[in-house]
Length: 469
Image 1 (cartoon, rainbow, N blue to C red):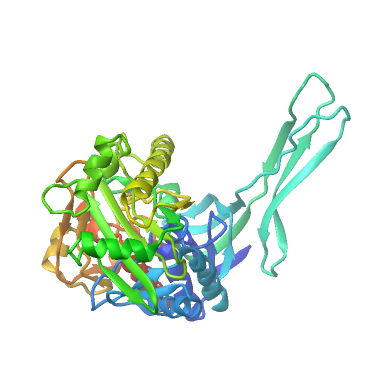
Image 2: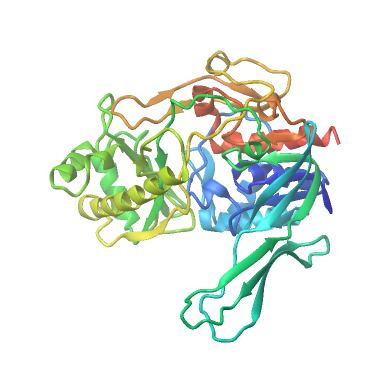
């Protein structure tokens, strides 16, 4: 059995921060990632830039090192005082480099099959490799083929996890093979386990208690990128079209134009782009729902490319089930095509632009949240309550997206803290959660879920655990 000090399931925003700091502290760390790269929402979800979250943040060693590493690789800029403008493709490489350089073991394309419990402790877990190899055609001979899948063992050698016995049929009238298989899982042992899956997947396997707020949610997004944009022309046009520099800043950084702009269908605020969206709906280029949220950013190291924080998609129900997620992806794909056409027609500089990337995952704002040793409340955020063991200090607002007009909320706040106890399972003594699944009420989570706070959660938790090993 392979043993670690800390096993982290999920190589996204919070998971990478936790793994990196644990490695720097000399701990033996494993990170298990279901995809073929790290970064989660930042890379697979194209959720860039990292939003600024105040001047008094704590547990920022990982973030600062990431900024420096990305800058050295040509994939970072500081835009209006925010250093979190990253290139999502370079970020995949830099995150892996940072983690491996501090000794973190990474297993890609893998997930947790089952968990072995004893009383209030996780004793070990079993991991399996995600992909299967199937023989696709039948032959007339009687024989057997074996397909294998596995992971690296402690000596970096490939270790078999499962064996598939693909028994080939001998009947010419049968089209497909009869496949028999048995999973041979490899157990992993650790002192502590961190659920960084974003949806408390490990906590669900452990039957942890969750906060019951099923009747409230936020829409999801499916981000994308357009390339072939004449950013200089777009920036010059934007400076003339929208005189609100808070909404539409345009800046020259190192001889390259960088910008952002936004629009929503809410009528409680003036949006310069509103007439263009109104016209596009009238001319059947956009559906009315396509204009509920629109936001774009330029991307460091990708001249001529613009990242979109849209479309925003409402689920048919309050649960992000497989069915509703699939429907959201279908709706998002169609909306992206309409929005790209809108840009081609109505925005200067987009005449020859094209869709160059679509996120591999939905941008989820609300997910399963555990009941931890403490539940963060909206009042804690608004009052700036102080805690004995803070892992996060932030002033990011209470940010609630809505699929209905004039019902979104962006409530500004002063500095507030998130305590360690919001990351600790109330049910399992050696299980912790980092990221948007923290123990928090709905509106408190709407402030705490952003990437900068997730970085600090992962880092602050690991520093605490290191002092208790």
